[in-house]
Structures are given as structure tokens and as C-alpha cells.
Image (tube, rainbow over all chains, first blue to last red):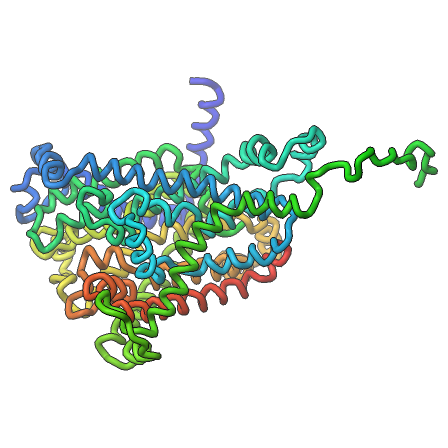
Length: 289
Length: 316
């Protein structure tokens, strides 16, 4: 153990010795709240590996006595599972990729270019932020249907390929980048697009990452959108596909539902645990600054 | 101290031959460049947000049903929304959901942020992560997990509560308790997001203010009341309105857990838009409901902008 680690441990011990009753109380409260908050996730993981008999047993237990992969096997036979997970990746990934490109282009123009009508346009974009997509759903569906895009990836992705929130968010970030970082390039005769691509974008990676993650998570998890724009079970996402199992066609065993849920949350939860610190910090500042 | 300007600094080179030094500066060219940058996003937003919004307004004044030519019915759909008790239910249920969800989620988030802001607390980053995890779980999956936990026969939570002497019964089949339950699932899923925003707001409060308050003899309660809460009021307003807008759009977990039942007791605005627009094909009526949702959201957003208007003035 290095001396630094020893020192750190000693500091920790000191901290523990200095514990005040209020701190102990707060910690106990937080442990209880965290346990309640994590309970549904724990139950998904444990139930996914429980045999059917145990899932339906009374009294119910938290831990499985015997672990099994039967639920995972059933759910992959009930649904075109790989296909649905793939659709989720294509849909959420496609929306994220297009939105990042189109939003950052528009944000660059609004933040760092001088043109006629810039203020009016900015206000108009902020105004569309206030329109919930649920309110435009019916004519939007008719439009997508008229274009022949129902049950296609295009239909799922195109309407979300740019959005007012992303433009506004990136604009605020571009605005905060110092003006003079592109002065040298400008003197060298670089055009706007080169400045955008090789100077502004590389400096905006944290903002792009945050927006990208946010967009990906929201679309992966969205239920109403794939429910409306896909009628073919093969074209749904994992989130909408799972709801087919609970439909009136019959009661699906809880174990199978939990196995499906586990697959649906696994990619996001793993990704989140890897980058959680940065993700949380970035999200915290997203709405406010 | 001002040095006399040397002749060299006053010297300006003559303009190059051939007029303007850089073509890039011509206003026409600048506007065209900007248009190029903006075009893809504006086309998408115009086609898939603005146009449907206007289209929904037109439809809301007709009896469009997917069959035959829609006829103009004036304000009839809006009269139906606010007069027919069955239809008014979607509006009142949404208000009830908002009232149940917003204060619970916001107060839970605020309380936990205040607790976790203390530097003495052990395992802070673990707690922070744990409380935020539900935010990356979809509403649909949250709904499956909670439905199972509270299942009257095999639900673990139901069983544990019974052990403590609390009879839960079949919550999702109970017209009184189904709505609080679906609102609770939303609290579970979203409070972590508000919590993180509060935490960021708390960390922006300069510690010197607390020092000063302590010097003046302010106890922890008084510091909370006179320093923390007033300085957090902007964050508070932001989170409140954000939460209310989210509440107006409730759909996913309701669709999974109750399907709007029992007896329509969880039928919210978006549930009704989905049902009447896509199942019953009452497109005119569903469009009128869409506009109720749109206007409610718009009003909340305007309040939000009024709040933050001062801070954002230097933006544009």
C-alpha cells in the first residue's frame, strides 16, 4: 500500500470517528431509500433467473433457490428478440446520429454566424420546444403514412432527426466557447464549414456526448413513438415489443416478463454505470446553464 | 498613461485591388451560408412538428374519422371535451395525476439533495448513483417490475407489507388507488433527475454565505430557511415546471399497468388521445384533446420563461 493510500485510509477512519448522530441518521435514511429505489431493479434481475414454480410460489421469496435460464429462453422464443433489440439500436442510434449532426449545424449558425433574421429564428425554435410531440401525433402519423413510412426505420427516425432542444442546448454551449479560437483559422482563409468541423466541434465533445446520451436513452425507452409508427411486430423496439407480451392474448409469466425487462435495461444500465459520474454531472447542467 | 501613437500604428495598408478584401463578408453570401447550415434542421422541424401542429388545429374543428370527408363542426369537439362527463374525465384525471406526482417527486428530490449535499456523509457517490439509476430504466420496464412487486398473489412488496400489518389489496384494480400507484411509478422513475438538478443548484451556492450565517449565529434550520431555500428558488421553479410538463404527458406506465382502467380512473389526456385517435379513429375529437394538452404545456412553459426571462436576456 502506498503512503498516499495509507493517508487516505487514515482520513477515512478519522471521518468515521467524527460521525455525528445527525450524519448517522441521514445515512440510515439514505440506505433505506436506496434499498426501496433499487428494489424493482433487483427484482428484475433475480426473477429473470427464477424457475416458474418459484416465481408463482407463496410466500414469495427474494432470492431464487435454483437458478435457471428458462425465462430467458422463453422470452427469446415468444418474441423476435434479437430483431427487436437490433431495431432499438437502429432507432435510438439513428435518431442520435442524425440529431447530433443537424442540431450542431443549426446551433453553429445560430451561435456564431451573423445573418438576417437570426433572433426571430432563435425565438421560433425556442417556441417549438414547447410543443409536446403527443399533441401532434395524429397528423404526424397521417403524414408518415402518406409518405409510406409506417413500419420503416425511416418513419421511426426521420421525424426526430433534428429537435429544438438539441439546437438550443448546443447553441448555448457554442456561444460559451471563446470567440478567438477560430480567429487564426479565419485569417488563414478557412471557410465556415471548416471552422465548424475542425475547430468548434472538437471543442464541444462534452456537450455532444451529453446530448447524444440523453437522446439515445430517451428514444430507447420511448413507448408511444414505436407503438404508433410500427404496426408490424417485427419492426417494434424492445420497449414496445415487451408490451405485446402483456396484451389481452394471455398472461405471460412474471419470470418471462422480468427476463425481457432485464434484456431491455441491460445495455443502458451497463453504459450508465461506466460513465455515471460524467453523465450525472452533465445532465445536471443540461437544463440550467 | 497614454503613449503618443507612432506613425506606424496609424498606417493602414491600402485596400487590395478588386474591391472587397474577402468575398465571405458579403451579406448575401453570409445569409446563404447560414441557410445551408440551418436547412436540414429547419426542414425536419417544419415538416414534422410545425406542420402537424397546424394540421391538428384544423382537424380539431372537424369530425374527421378516417372515413369519408371530414366536415366542419366548429367548436363542437372542444365543447365535448369540457361538457361530457366521460370525456372531461381525461382532463380531470390528468390534473389529479399532476397534483399527485409533482409535489411528491419534487419534495423527495429536494429532501434527498439536501441530505446528500452534506460533505460529512459516507458513500455519497454510491447513493447518488443509486438514486439516479431509475432514470435510465424505461417507464414500461418500471411498470412491469412494480406491477409484479405489488401483485396481490405473488408480489413480494405486497407480502412484506402484509407482514407489517398493512393490507394493500389489488391496487391496480381499485379505482381509488390505481391513480396514486401509477403516479408513484413516475415519482420512482423521475425523481432522480430532479434530485441531480437540485444537487447542482446546491453546489452553486457559495460556502462563504454559510460561513457568514454561522458567524451571525444561525443554526442549521435557520441556514436552510434563510440561505439555502431562497438561493435555490430558481432551481425550484425550473424543476417544478419541468415536472408539471412531464406529468401532463403521462402515458407509458399507465398503458402498461392499467390501460386507463379500472373504470377509466387512470385515463389521462395522452391515453385518451391514443385511444380516440388510433383505436376509435375519432380524429377530430382526439385533435381537440391534443390542443388542450398543447395549450396547457404552452402556458406552463410561458410561466417558465417569465421566471427565467431576466437571466436569459443576454442570450439572444
